[in-house]
Each structure stands twice: as C-alpha cells, then as structure tokens.
Image 1 (cartoon, rainbow, N blue to C red):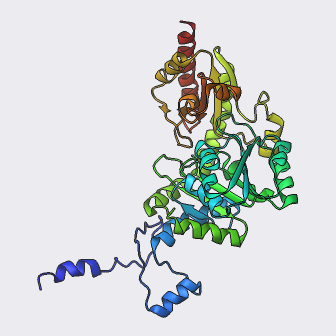
Image 2 (image 1 turned 180 degrees about the vertical axis):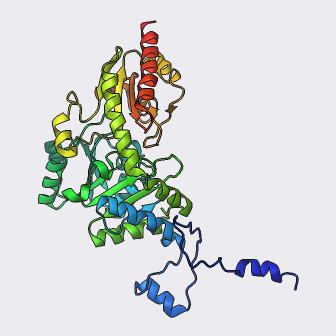
Image 3 (image 1 turned 60 degrees about the vertical axis):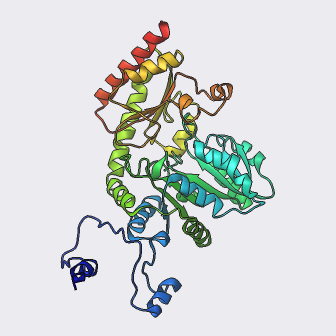
Length: 397
Ligand SMILES: *Cc1c(COP(=O)(O)O)cnc(C)c1O
C-alpha cells in the first residue's frame, strides 16, 4: 500500500487550463499514448495526426520547422539535430551508389569533408567546382550527376555563387540543386523562389542566434524527396532535442530584427575597416571593391548580410595581437550569434588546408572573418580600431 502515492505521481495529469499558453510549451515526452490499436494504425497510416515516438517527430521540432518553412516559402521541412545532420540527410537520403554530386569548392569545412571523404565510402561520386563560374559547374557535369550542392555566399571569402546561371543549367538537365542557405538566411535569399529543390540550414547560427542550441533544417520542394529525407533522418537518428527546438523557436521570433541590425552594422563596419591604416583588404559582398560585386547586387540586392572578412598585414604575431586587443569580442569559430564573433580561418576552419592552397584563395595569417552582431556600431568600430592598431604595431616589430 505504501507505494500508492509513488505510483500516482506518475499517473497524475498535467494541470488543466481553459486559457492557453502564449509561449510555446516544451514537450520532452519520448513516447505518446494512443487510445487503441485502431487509432495507432490510423496514426501510422496518416489518417489521423498524432505523435508516436520522439525520434520519428515531436511537437517542438514541428513547431520550429513550420516557422522556418514560412520564412523560406517551404512546405514540410524537417528540423534535425545539427546543420551537418541536415546536409547529411539531404545528400545521403537522396543519393545512391553510382550517383554523382557536384559541390561548391568553398563549402563549409565539414560539408567538404563529407563530400570528399565520406560519400565515396558509400559509392557516391563527388566533384568540387567553382560556383562563381557556371561554366566550371557545367564542365563538372557527368551523365550520372544527380545533385549540385551550393552555398550562395562562401565561407570565409564571401564569394557569391552564380545562382541564376547554375539553377538554369541544372533545370535544363534535370539535376537537383540543394542550397545551404545558412549564411544568406531567408532574409537575404530564398532559394525556393528561384527554383532550388532543397534548402538546408544550420539553425545553430543566425536563425536561433544565441549560441545555445545546435540544430539543422532541411526542406525539399518535391514530396517524394521529402519522404526520402525524412525516412533517412529518422532511421539514422538525426533527431533534434525538444529543448533545443524550443530555445531556437524563441530565438527565431527576433531573427528578422537581429539580422537587419547585424547587416546594417556589417555594412558600416566594412566601410570603417576599409579606412583603417593597416587593413589590406575588406570583403563584403555589396561593397564596390568586392570581386563579385555586380553579381552580389543582382542576386542579393542591398542585402550584403552579416558577415565581413578582412586582412591585416603581418603573420601569426599580428593576428594574436589583434584578438588580444579585443577581449570583449568572442574569438570563437562560429557565426550568427547575437554578439559579434571573430574567427581566424588559418588556425580553425582551414587549418587542414595546405598553406599555399589557403593563400591561393586569400586566407593568410592576417585574414579574419567577422560575424557581426547587434551591438552599438560606435563601440564595434572602436573595438576593431584597437585590434587593427595592435596588429599593425606587432607587424612592424
Ligand atoms: C555551421 C554551418 C554548418 C554546420 O552546422 P552545425 O549546426 O554546426 O552542424 C553547415 N553549413 C554552414 C554554411 C555553416 O555555417
């Protein structure tokens, strides 16, 4: 008899409320109880909507996915446990042994690794080509090419892909185009509006925006592809945590405000950096001195985004002096946080790339990438002024 209260603890219902919660509730339940086998049958058959087991789907993932769908003009997108889970599901859920996929040659580091080292172990053939040149992508096409994976703006040199050219040639040949839209965000570019087939996000970055949740999103225009991607993700367990989804949804409500402010700051900071002595070059897509300026304006309009890259003179000593002179900014290999973060590709994302190959694409020891946040722009300009001055002193020693 003494165990009755303990048993009741598990059986007691959640408090009822005639009014509804304004904030999204968190639903961490792993399993869902149905009334009887007929109902469970109907759930699996799609006759009634209902959750069964959290790996197969849960309300917080769906709540977040429907909101990102709305931003991207997508239908039935899937939230998964990381941006890389989304990239993996888009490639491995769709491609089979013998298929060929072309990737942009400046994709996110782990996406490049997946393309160059992992897919080949499963018999999927891959090539990399320069997405700023549609002719280079076209030259990489083979009879078995099934997909092209692109980022609109590359990391960290902020080159702009020839989206219209590549989308047109892919459409003419029946090749799928998957776009990792993490950098551009749906505020800068909406791939589905331009004919892309698959959209991918690292929700970890700007969409969630607070460096406290690791998540991804993948959506396909075609229902058959959506089902293939969903089945692969559920089978391989790429499931997102309800708590992370809840945090990301909270972040998403202010995404447009954060993005617009960060972008305004980024454009102003790029101009400020370009005027500082000791800065060799600044990369920002909509600046007139950007190598892809005309294409950036054609594709992105005035939306240059929240990322800026720049280069100072001097080697590692100058780079060390720069980050040490800006202790209030996180020197951290990420992006999309509400606060400004600074990364040094030569020692992080591109450390595995040989120095000559790195320098060929402009990633020297003095090269930095900034993910601009929403801070006061005057304060940011002062911070970077101090960092660049410290680097210049170190370079002249
Ligand atoms: C960060 C990032 C990823 C990977 O996302 P995770 O959430 O870290 O797994 C993929 N693509 C791009 C462009 C990214 O910036």
